[in-house]
Image 1: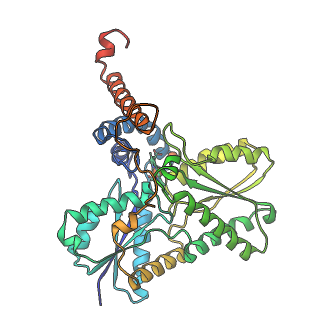
Image 2: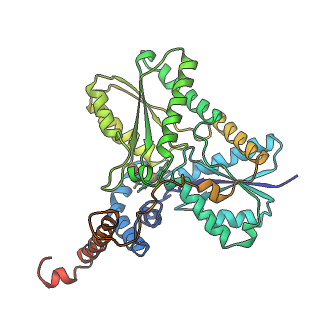
Image 3: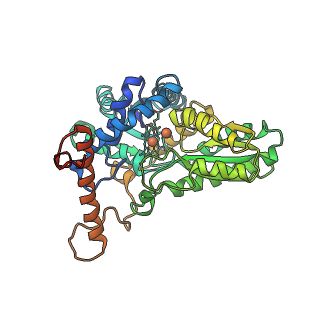
Length: 391
Ligand SMILES: C=CC1=C(C)c2cc3[nH]c(cc4nc(cc5[nH]c(cc1n2)c(C)c5CCC(=O)O)C(CCC(=O)O)=C4C)c(C)c3C=C
Ligand SMILES: [Fe+2]
Ligand SMILES: [Fe+2]
């Protein structure tokens, strides 16, 4: 029987307070997270942003016990999935590959090679594809495959996303239905989907399918809820966890909560939709920050639906996805990371006079260089602005 390696992809999280700075540096070093026109600026800017953000992030991780539970939960999911697959008669071993913290993707690949597996199924723990999450991990794996002929020779089947998969949708609807039924008047409970946001330009310029997949998923969950409960609940979809000054997908969760409060909504069932594990954004941002905001806005009953974690229906659904992938054709990493070909990835490099795409790009590049030099001078305390007395 073939030995199957199931490679679970996730983001990773700092396990101790002292890991927060280096974890943030790894995250912001990724061009799929901050898209800069000039790669030479990536590392200095990552250092700068991680240094500036570290204390705020550390405070958030302190409030949930001093570190992220993501590794522990992902490893539990991996063990349970492995058992479910073995019950289906598949000789599977699961491996965890985190993008920005331990266990890193390289170490998962080293384990796969050491175990002599015959083929690999790549399964992101992100049901919805985004350039910034599954896309980034697929590309990281592609780099490792290109550098390693032994890994490159292994047949690979990638699962790109499963936002509309029955197993996943039904597991989510099951958890949400329990919270709706616990409300004093289940018919009038308002279902509030809060998805992790991404910058709007990812969707509108780079063609990230993320927003479309989130919207489809929310609709399918609502349909399943109606079929299960026999009544329809009103719902909102909003986006949380915005970072930085650019515009992200809207509506923003905080603004949408305040609006529902103004409209007189009292019972709210909050669904963390893009996350399959508890982590900082559910335990701190939703449970502490948004709960407080909701109460201040007049919402009196704030029920947060738990993340799927090792929910048996969810794990069964993942096992079926792996089984289907094994029965289907090979899907390589390029196919899994592909975006629609008609979209603008980066504006053209060609120089042209006038107020056009090219001049906008060059203005942006010059502004970025100037801004970075300014920040470096601000931190180092010396440079041309100090020399002429402006700083
Ligand atoms: C669907 C899930 C996620 C998307 C999409 C996503 C995009 C994205 N995230 C940042 C910035 C940060 N993310 C951070 C942590 C973090 N993000 C996700 C998931 C998605 N991110 C997870 C699972 C985690 C780990 C949480 C944990 O428990 O440790 C952080 C660090 C935490 C903080 O300081 O807030 C940052 C920063 C961007 C910029 C982005 C899209 C471009
Ligand atoms: Fe994130
Ligand atoms: Fe956050």
